Image (cartoon, rainbow, N blue to C red):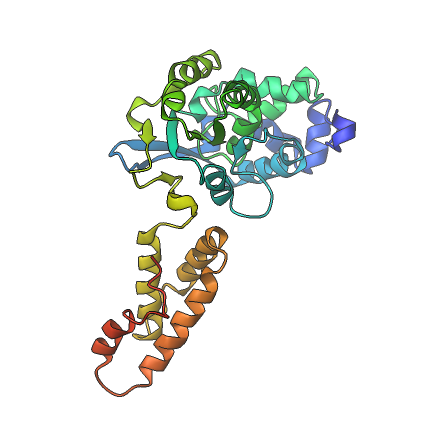
Length: 324
């Protein structure tokens, strides 16, 4: 499989050092279990708890990027997995599109997703694609920390998707027989169909499959959405069969553009560009709406007096989008 996929031929430590073009001492350290390879810190989560991030040091990050581009990106994830893959388009939007026409949605979150993927599964993946035990062990050491996938490593997301192939196919096989759409974006599992009872009835079986694969459901994040709810998948609204970016984000973009054009505050211009690009990946014509909005604001700045009143009146005009 290594030759057919065009993967680097690695049989031992010297082969890896040669491919990486790094000194033996540095490669030895990067493949060791030294705790100094990662900088650990915590970030707050929306539910009030904190998530631990293990960020690799610069030299390890460079090597992980090599593993990602030269090995992992050349392997196929399941067709039910979205996100963190090399390709075009927004994986968030692609995932949401799969569910946009169905009436009922079930969302399930995996608890402690990356730490739940042990070192032995990473090692097994490298062996399965043709690397011998020595090479697989070296690559595994580069990609794992404290016996599992670290949240923060460059390679963790792609490795998780590849390792979850069996999980995806098991769940999909069960869902396909019941005409239920299934997708997974990292630790977010989404199911949808037009039959409420059918969708509610799959929970126990999905839970059993997850547990057999080594994962636990985060009970506090399980949601069942009906047509009466404001349906969101991965932050994207899919009500009435339409896929739209969050209203709050578009309001924020509108306010930042006003600050930039009317008030001359250009500190967030790069951030505006990033938001517009992201929203455009979900709503393809959004950049045209932004351009019209910018043109109107530019015209406003040339008017004499009453700028604030003209700004308020401006959003009442029917031909100008309010970005919601």
